[in-house]
Length: 179
Ligand code: PRP
Image (cartoon, rainbow, N blue to C red; front, side, top):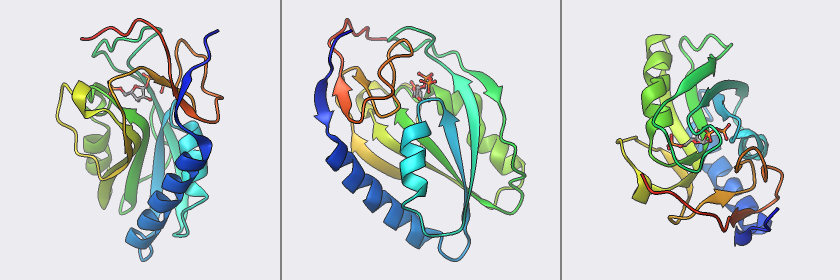
């Protein structure tokens, strides 16, 4: 198994997560929020982020899949778990580890479905944004870092199921297929 080159070390990630948590805490201090993590990639970022949020927070997850075991997005999104929480009247924050092509958020219609379910507001927070790969327009409200056009792994992000447990975000030296 290749050792990925460090792109963002654990300290840098932690500092940025603290900043995002402070910003989100201020924005939702009066209302509270429901954080909905998109599995599986968001699970570590979400776990750290919610511990930096001081506003009242409910945690839920959705599951969808767009990549299979390839480094190349297929544009096909399968929703395999809907939210359990009734979001009516609640302020919802969708949490992603990375927004790449934008297909996952767009094709799943997650934000639209939450709005249709009566959410008072729906925003998106992603740790990594890779705008150079965007295929469809997606509005992002909170962004941790802009990612380079490299295949990144660690801190929840995988390649073929591996590397999610790395405490840092690294670049994997693999054949990276452009769409
Ligand atoms: C990753 C990531 C996002 C999505 C972003 O998920 O967690 O959900 O890809 O890519 P996109 O903007 O091109 O759609 P993935 O499908 O790899 O599943 P995982 O979260 O289980 O790793």
